[in-house]
Length: 318
Ligand SMILES: Nc1ncnc2c1ncn2[C@@H]1O[C@H](COP(=O)(O)OP(=O)(O)OP(=O)(O)O)[C@@H](O)[C@H]1O
Ligand SMILES: [Mg+2]
Image (cartoon, rainbow, N blue to C red):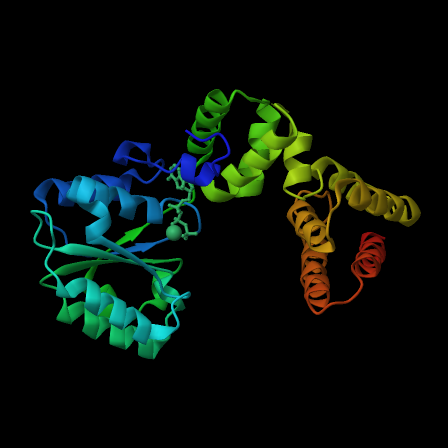
């Protein structure tokens, strides 16, 4: 395989058993493929957990080497509105499946990006072509999909991957790519990716471009998040009311690791709950993080905002 390939594609699952952590979904879908029949499907879940990958595996299993002619992938948020979707669906659905299957598959990614009206139109389209097509809809939140569409689909909820699945994936890639990933680096990858495999593979690939011996530090600098250790140290200084040193450490951590204010505020927010303070004070601090994050989004000076946050924390801790 081309060594310059993007890992998220290079390591895209090609078979059911390569899709990790979604057994509750995969087992039922396997049944549909075995019977060579399936209802419309709705895949709901966070980014990078295998929704598109499973749709592709279904198509490859059902249609074998003719899968490309029988599988249409559309992105609800790319395509300019439901009309484009409708025309593409119509053209695709008009001709009979060229395999021995009675239907073709239309995969509509990010279907929760469709407006209510567009979803109504989609629902009619689904009904119209039910004889010749099966739809697989993918979304982040099934609650954003109209009930009448949901009730026409078998709904499957995908989950963020668990630690052992993430570790398996890291080990498989590390072996294949000839890189070393320390245990702490694995933990860091798990923390920064929060169960999103695409994010994990991208960070790992960027890290591997820098070094073959990947440590916790590599991961955090690539992922642009301060090492939790350093953020923790800054917060400890704050608790000791040592504003001057906390501020100094914050500045050096940000500069050395090329962190944005947003990276830092997210990391601080994550660490607050572990502080030895009474819960009320922690709540106040979490609330402030939200306020500062908002100001940063609105475009105010990031370091100034973080400084003011540290000052507020010192006052709370006193
Ligand atoms: N469950 C999984 N097991 C193994 N690898 C996975 C899994 N989920 C995702 N991946 C890896 O991440 C890549 C992206 O996954 P995929 O496109 O299936 O995500 P998705 O759920 O469709 O996300 P999105 O909502 O962003 O479209 C895959 O090519 C694969 O390398
Ligand atoms: Mg997808």
